[in-house]
Image (cartoon, rainbow, N blue to C red; front, top):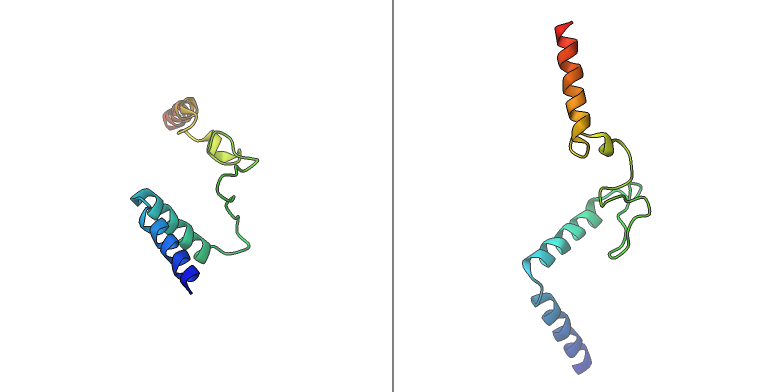
Length: 87
């Protein structure tokens, strides 16, 4: 019984020692784990990087063709849009 109380006290101390950032991260992880469909993409466990992750932005795809990651593509798009409006 005293060992169980000691273990409970250690768990309590560990939880009370967390800062706001860690509490928020834990809450988001819990919400994600309880609401995410098991057939949907599952996040990697903490400390492991996804093999397809590039520059922390996920797997290559349309995100790399966006105007946020390639501003020159946004400029080209706006120029084509203006040229199409003139015609």
